[in-house]
Structures are given as structure tokens and as C-alpha cells.
Length: 219
Image (tube, rainbow, N blue to C red; front, top):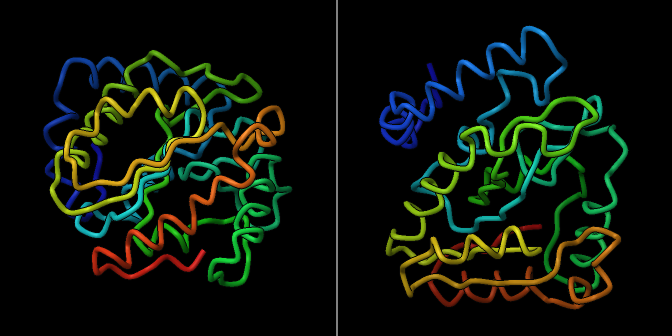
């Protein structure tokens, strides 16, 4: 049973008894027993454990966990300290530097963002080793779409960062007009130079948080 030990728990209590989740759970039990799956089972829900619903003020939507050894840790775009940074994360770092926003000591482990209220949410929360999107369409998207919908209906102002066509498709789930939706191409090397670099999202995010009397993120 899912136990995140914070105010997301009622959401998980509802979802984990639904038929789609029971099917997903059975699928995952078999996968973890027979294959190498990332992230480790105890880290699947790190995004929710580290960033409570009440504290969420920024949502960064990813698609799929990293699928190489030692990378995935339950937070979109984040990898463990000491792991080689994936190119997308390198490009995120470059854009932050170029924008000149306030930053702390850089780490590939983005847990420090999560603790400040940044929900680093992949749409699919698990993946088979070396096989991108191998757990897509197994039920995770139902769970994470419902989480985004709940955040999008909440009237407290939030920033949603949607990078790439997949993340941008989640815009339809964000109902409240109180939120700021920032859209750009994905930070991967294939697209970063077509609009991610220079997007100004981190600066725009902090300006919005300041305008809505919320503490800015130290990136």
C-alpha cells in the first residue's frame, strides 16, 4: 500500500483501490520480481513524499524516468549526486545560469527544489532498464493526470512548466485561471536550441511567485 506520510495520502487512499491501480500494482509486482526496474521500489513516489500538496507552488512535468543504472530517483529530470548528468538536465542548468536567477550550489539531485515546493512529476513513474517508455500506458498516466487535475483545480496560484509536446498536452488538465502556465520545447539536445534556451521560465516563475506573495525558488 502507498504511504507518503503527508497531505497527499487521502489522494492515494482513493486511487490505490481503483481497478486501474490494482491492475497496475499487479503488473509492477511481476516486473520488479522478474526484471530490473527503475527507480527502486521505495523511491517511486519521491515526488509526492518530498513535496506536499499544500506546499506545491511549481509543477515540472516529465514523461518517463531515466532508464540507465543509478539515475532514476522518483523526481523528473533529477539524478543522484555523483551520477553523470543527462543532457536534458545539463541544458536546464545552462538555462538557469543564463537567466541569472538566484541559485544555490548546483547538484544533479533536485531534491532541494522539491523541498521548496517544486513537484517534479513524471507522467509514468517506473521504467524497465534500458527500455524507455516501457511502462507507458500501464496505468500510471491515470494516477498522475488525476494529481495534475487536482493541483490545477486548486485556487492557490501555481506555476506549471510544460516542456515538450507530451508535457504540453497536460495543459487541458489545468482548470483554474489563477495559475501561470509556461510552455516551451523539451530541454533535450534535439530541441533545446529551438526555444528552450532563452525561454526565461525560471525567472518568470519567480516573478509570478513574488507577485502572488509566495517565496521564490532558489534554483
